[in-house]
Every structure is written in structure tokens, then in C-alpha cells.
Image (cartoon, rainbow, N blue to C red; front, side, top):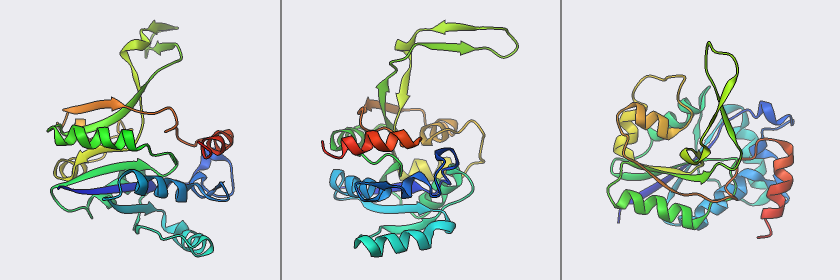
Length: 225
């Protein structure tokens, strides 16, 4: 049975969230969002080793919250100035020949059916796998240098979620290469390095990312499901 490591990335500052603390430290069900994310990952992939990526500015804060709630933290990795650097720091700690799940700490609801599908795709020999959901809004494309915009066929597009899954050997190689501003997620880092055999698996509507304060209210409703 192959080893599995789940990297939970929670080193962001949460500037857009507009709260005194980053969104991953705001309360959901009476404790930090991040604790629900970790618990749901442990439940979905019980065999996985967990690595938690935090900003050095919030390691002490996290320790205080874990003591307050009697919560067992995963091993902590110090993040960097960008998400790319934060993931890179964690990937460097992962052993060879390991399945790696990279997940946003602000997506508290990890679904077992999604993680099972991701791991199944790697078992079948794919270089990576990402969960996706249909785009429900109409889309328009803007073109540099041209006025206006044009409609595009939304059935050709998918919205990407996390966790995203890859074999550590490929991920090590991809993150050893220079940073590019086009990197928006781990799949884009992999694709840039030539690892384009990335499966799309069905995501879940509850696996949304808490970005704005109103998202916490929605997440509170999902806690009861």
C-alpha cells in the first residue's frame, strides 16, 4: 500500500477577508475553521500523514488555539511569501514514492468520495488528479488590446477545487523549477513542468473555499449535514 501525505496550506494572510485574523483562524462551530479542515481530512484519508503549512507569524497563535481546544496539530511547516513557496516548503519534506494531496486550509469540508476518486486516479497510473465542478454562471472572455468581450461556451470549462493529488516524485521535480506568475494551483505547476496527464474527477459543491465573511455563514449550515 503506497504512502499518502496530505499537505494543508494555511499560510495566507487573509487580507481580502477583512477580519483581524486570517480566515482559517476564524471560528466555525466554536473553533477555528482550520481544525474542521484537519478533522475532515483525517476522516476522509485516515492513512495519510498530515503536514500543516503556517505563516511564522501565526505559529504561536495556532499553538494557543490547539491548547485551548485540546486539539492535536499535525506537524507544522513554515510557509513562504506566496502559496507556491509554501507548498514547495512542504513538498520538500515528503518522501519519494508517496501520494500527495495538497489542500487549502480554508476549504473545511473534505469529502471522502472526492479523495477516494483522486487516489483511484493515481492508482490507475495518472500523473495527477484534480476535483472539478461545473461552471453555473455564464462566462465572457476579455481580449487584450480589443474593446468589449465575447461569450464563451461554459460547457468547455470547469471550476477547480482542492485537494489535488500527485505522485511526490513528479511534484518534487515540478516544484524544483522556477516560479512563474501563471501558477494558480498545483496542477498548473505540474503542467508547466511537463506533467500534463492530470485526471479530472468529480468535485463536490460543499468543497467551497471560505473567501468572504458570508462564506462562514454558509459553512455553518454545512456543519450540520
